[in-house]
Length: 139
Image (cartoon, rainbow, N blue to C red; front, side):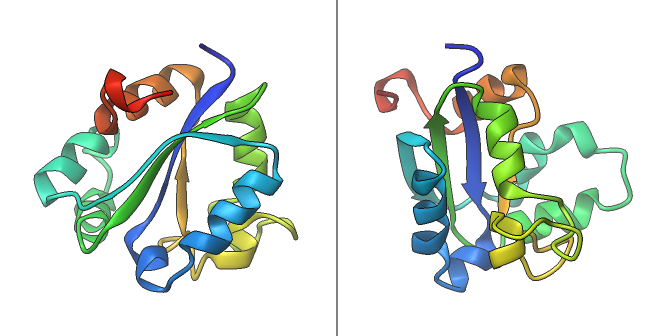
């Protein structure tokens, strides 16, 4: 279902700050249907595997540590033009630069603690969704 599904996760600091409900509300009000959702916690090794595309970057270790620090809420979302529309809804990585009405403007603490992850392409949406959800968990 390329072009109508994307992957997101609420990051550990946002889960710890009880922001999941507000984030889900914005997602649903943005016209997205939640196809699959679960709360889980990544090990450092799993976070490393998920973010292996960043393995050579200076922030990789800190990213893996932060992403394994507590539970996340993983979701597959559905909507026409899902990847692009969700990237617009979440806003800039830096909440100071994020537009009003975006998830990161409302919930992010900083560029590093930016509340949510969102897939950047249809291909990555499928890869990332498959990382967290089996075929039996998708509707």
